[in-house]
Each structure stands twice: as C-alpha cells, then as structure tokens.
Image (cartoon, rainbow, N blue to C red; front, side):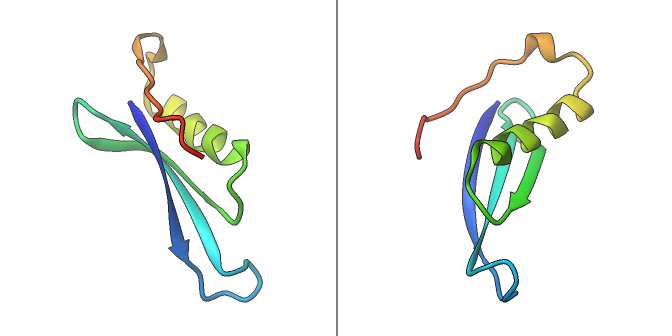
Length: 71
C-alpha cells in the first residue's frame, strides 16, 4: 500500500481555503482502500485514513506499507 496527500480547493468560508485528502492505495488491486478529508495536514489525517483501511481489510498482518516520506 502507498499513501498520498492531495490538496483540494474549498469554497466554504468556515473551513479555510484548502482541504487535505489522504488516501491509502492498494498497489495490487489499484483500489483506494482508505481515505480521510480534513482542514489540516496533521498526523491524525493519515491515522484516520489508515483506520478505514483496517475496517475494510480483515487481515492487516500481511500489509506492506510504503511512504515517500514527503511533508
């Protein structure tokens, strides 16, 4: 699996100018298996997206996680 973070423009005045979308991609099936959107890029953005991976995938002991270590 690999994670990615993308900025999305936001027109809502209450949230700020940008939203952050974190995704976890299954490289074998090319499916997005976890995601989370928030108004900040903190560690909880990635953690909440990974929690969705755990919910969808029953056997997480065989997961290999890759991150490019960006910002």
